[in-house]
Image 1: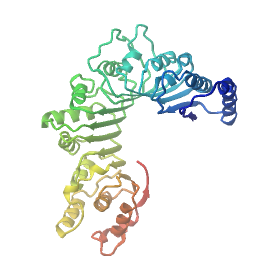
Image 2: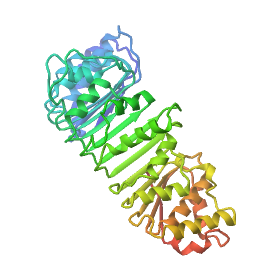
Image 3: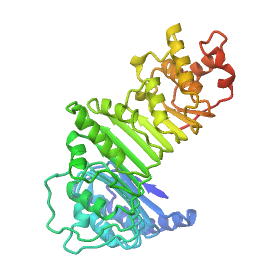
Image 4: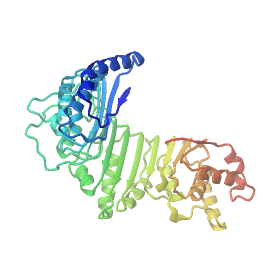
Length: 429
């Protein structure tokens, strides 16, 4: 892969006369140095004036020649003029990643021109309804080999109704889908035509309106994604208007839409939904789950125990920093709290019988000592766990874990042998 970052500059007339030759020599040099490079990227935050024609021409010439050696193109720029119009005729691309703060019309043309070969498409744009403009067109086309689609349009029009609605599957082989907004028209088309092909779905929900759209339109419904094995649901909103029934129904719909899911990730950063998530995952059996990650839902050690009881076949558990509930006094500070741990051990002697890997994703500002107590207690309860991993830039977490595991005055001294058998290593979840 090779990237270049254009900056401001106004070549003189004398310099401009030699630019074409210099660019050609540079591209040949790149090709000799990196004969196997197949990805070309342009990245620039420079906002060029429309009269900088010389700069446009030279950047366009360089990008045009580099892209001829590539099958993948990545584009990020704040100025639409950096993308030369003649590049829309570039064919044979298998991957396109597009991030821009200006017009997306040219890239839509490039995407459609490469419909026969495109395998991955990543779009982040401020222009509304980019997906609809790709699939809803007077001349309908199919992307026969597209398997990965990641779409994030920062500003979309929920009332947009395209003139031309596709009657076929735009992406007949789509396996992985990531949507950052519901895109009312396009979402229906994608889910309706790809129920049997989708294996990985990631939905980012930023408002109650988004969540209710998925549920009320039946896009997300019980068993609506029958082949999905990896499901990632992220809710980030500050609204607290959920009542108990609506919240529980919404959470249930998102989790139960994929009956074969094995990798489940729930990041619910929403005060109104948190009780529903906690209530659902602690009372619903999900025997098919093998990998579970929970984030932004405050859970006590007792809550996590109940979750593990409901996912008896889980082999890896991931816990985000906000998941550790700071109000539940997870630190062993008195006899009563130690008795509670002993009670959990007696009540759940076979907890997490297949769980061998626990990962803590810890923010640098997290309560490291409280998190260490949480990790130690969970490791004691889950007797079959052999590996503890954590991701943090701070050494305090492992320092606390080491002290609690080995110190003779530690409240966990009775479990020193168990804790010493664990494989503790830093890792990224």
